[in-house]
Length: 67
Image 1: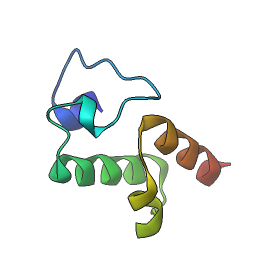
Image 2: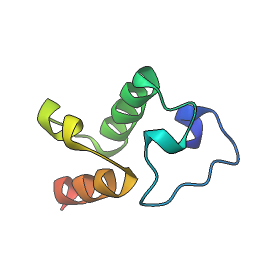
Image 3: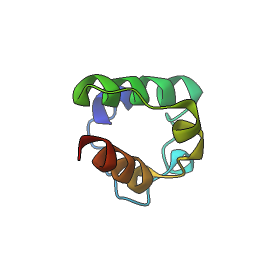
């Protein structure tokens, strides 16, 4: 997330959401999703992406996909 948002000292918790990070706009959200997909080698469904509310939900979704 530090690379995607270009914030070296970004502090992230499971509760962190787009409202907490000024640089987290729609374009950086897409970049984050693509970075996660590339890192773990899978694709999210649009419905999965749309339902995410915070970092914790993203972590949980990744965990279910990687087993």
